[in-house]
Image (cartoon, rainbow, N blue to C red; front, top):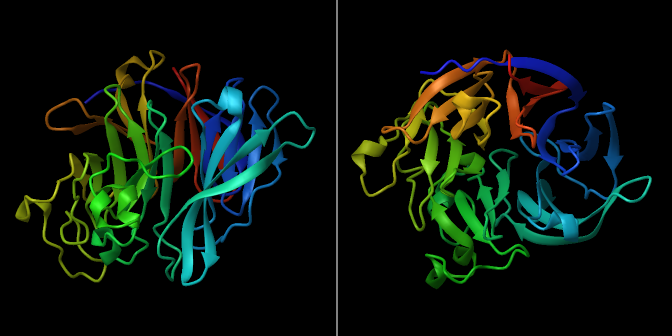
Length: 345
């Protein structure tokens, strides 16, 4: 175990925030689930609404979700948003990209293009996941939840319950493991996921995904090309009905998590801290916890992978973002949710 000291500074509040991204000048883009995108300036503590966000399907776990900047944002001003929408068959997540015009008095997103959607749309408003991250090679990764429908996580005619890798315009990449299994399967890098709510690359450029288990069995997975992570056939948790699910150990053909949690932590987000301001957290994974009201620090380089510190935040944590200056931005979950900054003590 480690004991990295820290202090918490409350900076601002937002209404059901979900994700944040940091611009080069230190300003933050913060999404709110009802469909509002805010531009927040930590130096003035003022936030303004960014216009042009499409209408979202708010309700359950749905609404406006993740925000990421294109790797060449400084030149092309492109941002990516994920959100829930309604359509034929029910609800599903969608990803758009557009240009963020910050030159006007009222900043807005223009030239919006829809580049990805969950297939098929289904009833219910849970387990969208829809986290996004860019790799160093410019490829866009998207996590897609199984929408509380179980079986789609194993169905290659659906992109639900999968981790996906695409070109920055949403087109499929040539070197994928399931390209012979149909158009949807061409997007897929790994399958058998439940509700993967956090994605991050470590210092070795390995992709890690944290996902909510059912009743028990939250997972941190190291993502490998073409692997099947087993849900809903195996899990270290059980169904909410009480019906047991076989554990990972019973089916070695499925990739087991590097670490799992029962009781659950209810993970919301994942980052790797790679800075010196908090030296004991350098190269460690930081996981936002909802029901656990915590930030869970995990050493992914130890064998086995293990939790090494748990920060008692006393609030549900929705997102974490290491700032350019080494401090750490933290978003609480829910109404009147705090934007917090973690600083050295």
